Length: 321
Image (cartoon, rainbow, N blue to C red; front, side):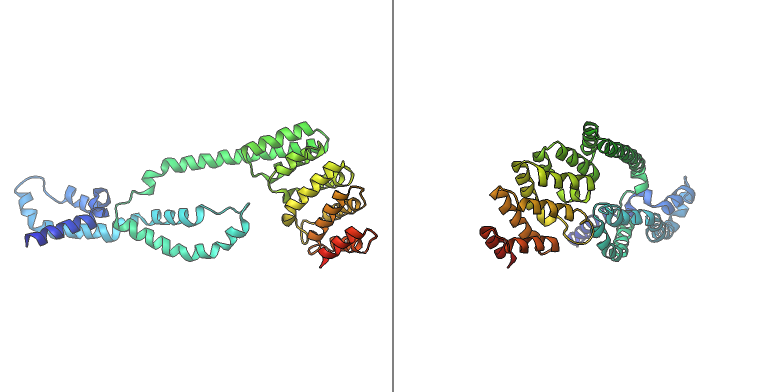
């Protein structure tokens, strides 16, 4: 019997040791009874003993099933927002992913909210309002700082674009580099910097920049790229052809954002007539890659296949199959 009693006591401590009711901060009804209903001195205190158990149990029941659960509703909802809605929703950079996740998040919301409510009702979990006042102020301050930082970056980008159009490449490069140093994912800053590097014929720098697909959506960059591809030195043109080959799968060939293609295809057509055999072969290879997504590339490839250069014609026919 003694062992059974010890086992039950140990089990109770293990299961209920973290229960909310064991924290007197979560038992306002019981605290009220102790402060206002139990006499401080005998004999009144002794006379109250027969009522202590039923009154105390009633107060504890109110705390467990009504008062404390009511105080954690807001905290449980905040837990749900943090878990499902506040984080990992990036509408600017992950629009499709965020949009696709809306339905699963909506379905999971009542389940997560219910679980958080039950957990906070049953266990002694600190209230968010007592632990997150300072963090909330910090979050607000961080948001304000981020907004000010974004506005400052927008001003720099506008000035950088203006400087680029006016021919002040040094200022455009400096401002775009400053923005990228603060936020390496600012697309417009990347495009401006890539355009300056291209104007300076620093093709190695352009080739190493990420997300090159973005560059071809910019008229200024595309015009400069097509000009170098058509009129640059043999080494420069070959480097741009290799760059196109490396990023060809990420360049849009149909739909929106393809206004650059006529300029690009015009430059490639000019390279077909180049005296450098390596440039001719590389150009034909690129046309073979683009032919399935662009009719102009396919037409150029068919023209080469029917041309007088037997070697290029054989290559073009093989790529057209």
